[in-house]
Amino acid sequence: MRIGHINLAESFTGAGNHFVGLIESLQRRPVQQYVLVRNLALAKRLDLIDGLTVGPIVRSPVTAYCLMPEVDVVHIHDRSGLPAGLLLTLTKSVPFVLTRHTSVMKSRNPLHQSAHNRASGFIDEDQVDIEVHLRIYRHAVNPPETPMPAPPGN
Image (cartoon, rainbow, N blue to C red; front, side, top):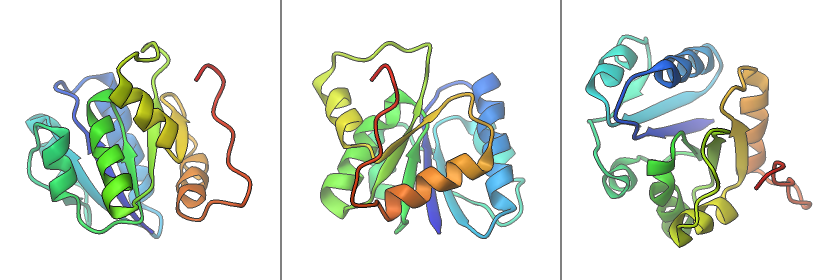
């Protein structure tokens, strides 16, 4: 499976460390990953992971959309990347999953609402079980006839 990741967070905080841990865990599985990030320190840290493809620094979701190579699924890690997921789904039929941040209230922005409605899955921000991530990615790529229910609170 080819997994794209978009993380447009400006800072490399605890969430950035969680992101690196996820990428490292997935890299030990039979998957290919392509990562686009906004933060230079995060890009440099990710570049140290063997076999991981880290794209150029991106500052906007449109740039992330344009630079994402052919992948099976894209994981959008923060709200700033929602338009990229929406564009990838609408124009290239690439499914996307979203990290669901409990600290962020549901947006009233119509673009964000549309992205949430079109997401193929949601992963809680504190989810560390790599098997859960892979199951949600596989579900996004090969959805069953019955759609996966949205998580509570959406």
